[in-house]
Length: 117
Image (cartoon, rainbow, N blue to C red; front, top):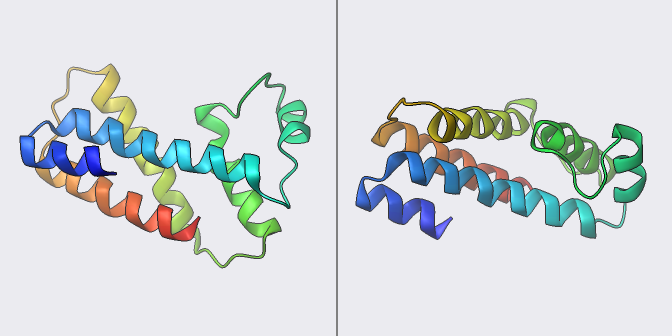
């Protein structure tokens, strides 16, 4: 999260958006692996993955885990993860240069996700 915020100061918006997403991804991955409720290896087998939850499946895995833990999370909050994922793909895989408002929104979304996890 600190690197994403530093990218805002440096006007490195696409890099910051990528960092914001990966901060959420890494925190989600850690949470899934260490949750006392979520059966990580069983989930990997269910989705046909080998060693980790793929990016495109992380939002669903995280939602399932939080439900198992009986954590209160609003649907619009868990959807912020998908928004970070979409923006990261734009920032990393297209020629589109995203701006300050895009990165600021990603940082805000990241903070909400981190608080929910």
